[in-house]
Amino acid sequence: QVQLVESGGSLVQAGGSLRLSCAASGSIFSINTMGWYRQAPGKQRELVATWTSVGSTNYARSVKGRFTIARDNAKNTVYLQMNSLKPEDTAVYYCGAGWGTVVDYWGQGTQVTVSS
Image 1 (cartoon, rainbow, N blue to C red):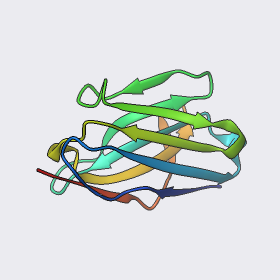
Image 2: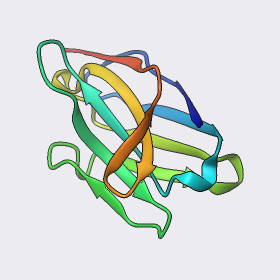
Image 3: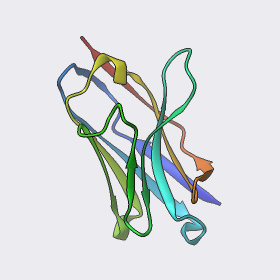
């Protein structure tokens, strides 16, 4: 089992920045991908950004150039730096982890609200 604990969600004005953190513990050897996903009210959960153990990253088109995902291997923590935030970025952000494209573990979610 892998446990994921997120932090960093908050209320921020449009144009502002936030950094989300996701700390992983447990059977870390069983995962090679960590990422961020978000779910806005009335919408399906969507991929925001992912990081793999070979160092590759992937971003949703809507956040490319504004968000950056990075991992601190020593801390088993993945970060999401979010800049130039827009009201449409408002959502619950979830950390997910698994092998390849399969997400086996989810965090509890952290709320990000961007006011206009």
